[in-house]
Image (cartoon, rainbow, N blue to C red; front, side, top):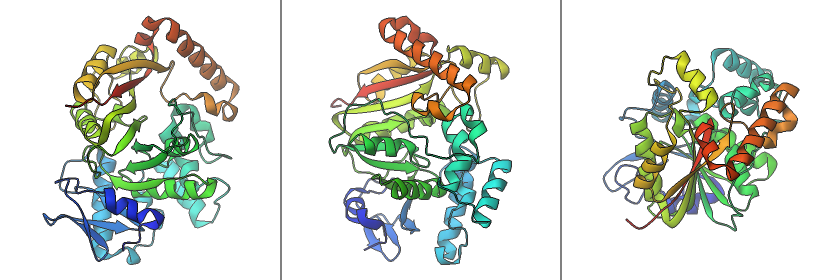
Length: 354
């Protein structure tokens, strides 16, 4: 049996080859499918990456190359237990994170989370980088889970997986970064939340079809090219149960802040991990076609990633922005036309039989 933790049986029962969707067997320290494709287990985490395919950005490419190198040389020889080079973290913040780890300044909050908070939660959190005293766990806008399986696409350090666990779901998180996935495991262990995590590309999910009750994603697919996002949506549909629900956050082309940012780049299509902007009708038609009947609701105004649950952490000026965003979001439930001007949107879809 592979060292994949207490959930190894669940993983071995439900993981499949992301290429062929065939079952996997154990061969030494790796998983192998009948077609001969091999996937290493590093630090107890299945790494289900298709290394020969074009990645969604430079971080994905670097992460893929690093993980292949680690696997080839064996994880015992690799000295960085945090796998920092797989994180999408800027130079200044990365240097500070490395110093914190080297000097054992770990604090109450995981060091990776402390220095990644603005990358994962948004620009409102920049003043908190390196200074977090608690985990920013958001509110999941889904009904009580009652043990349902919840797939978190692009889970990073696990904030939405923790939110799902607290609401009664069984969260399964996938992310391209091994460093982020290891941080998610540490966070769940630290605060007593459930969570199973796998390194994978959300365009090629390593799970059997029709497995999940819910597929969720926040601040991930909005960074993909539209073609890559559509690939991820097709995979979300494949792994959803019939009548299962997907809830996916995307950026609105006609949000006030979104328009300002698009003007700054002269309305050119984004590159690499830039935000891509979709119109509300485009989202509704695309998701309906690829997953099932879809509706769009407002998530936030004035920016992306604004969360009411984190109000206590923010400066007074940023709290005012959150208050305004929440007021407009609540008004939009009574005035549906206001959704067209939200910066952040949720697309809710129901998986129907093909």
